[in-house]
Length: 46
Image 1 (cartoon, rainbow, N blue to C red):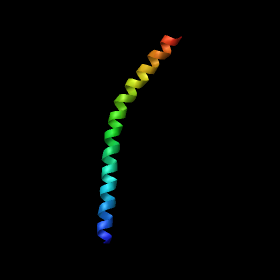
Image 2 (cartoon, helix red, strand yellow; image 1 turned 135 degrees about the vertical axis):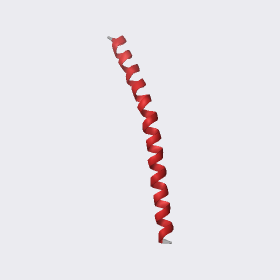
Image 3 (cartoon, helix red, strand yellow; image 1 turned 90 degrees about the horizontal axis):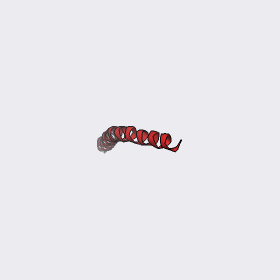
Image 4 (cartoon, rainbow, N blue to C red; image 1 turned 90 degrees about the vertical axis):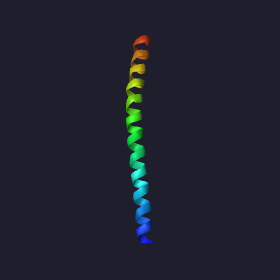
């Protein structure tokens, strides 16, 4: 029972890490694009 618990927690951690990594990469490119858009809007508003 104890080992099963450990395995499930390990799986959860690894899946969370994987999702976080994927989201990091995805949000990284999106953040660059978003900041560029914000910069353009800022320049246009002046």
